[in-house]
Amino acid sequence: MQGDWTAVVGLEDLPEGRSVRASLDGEDLLLYRMGDRVLAVSNRCTHQGAPLHRGAIHAAGSLVTVSCPVHGSTFELAGGRVLRGPATRSLPVFEARINAGQVEVRPAADAGAPSGSG
Image 1 (cartoon, rainbow, N blue to C red):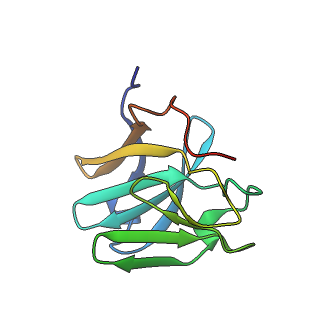
Image 2 (image 1 turned 45 degrees about the vertical axis):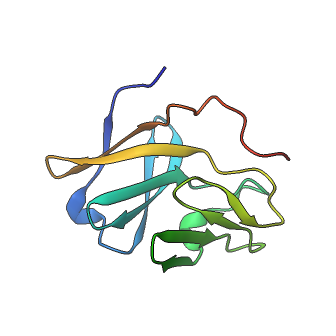
Image 3 (image 1 turned 90 degrees about the vertical axis):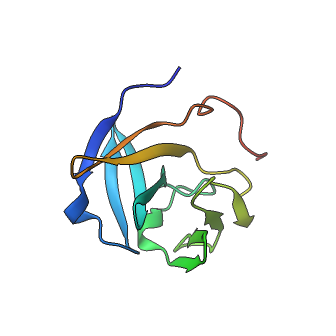
């Protein structure tokens, strides 16, 4: 069951092409804005919990990735998928939208489903 949408940051605080750290009910999030689309994932690397907002973001067309600043694991932001280890588990993904000048997020519909192996 999906939860309600929750505003986590004002749109003016999420510049185009930049990542921002936010929080939803105690969950540390990484937000990234591409035009009118916002990607939202857990801000903690699934390998050893490093803060991903301190890592490098790379955008190539529709593919946007973040690299862990500690051991270099690389994740796709749209789906949380691991593209390069040492991490083996995908990042938790959140739905995000822009509404009335606010970025709102909620757990993804399949947030309870297992993701990857690890």
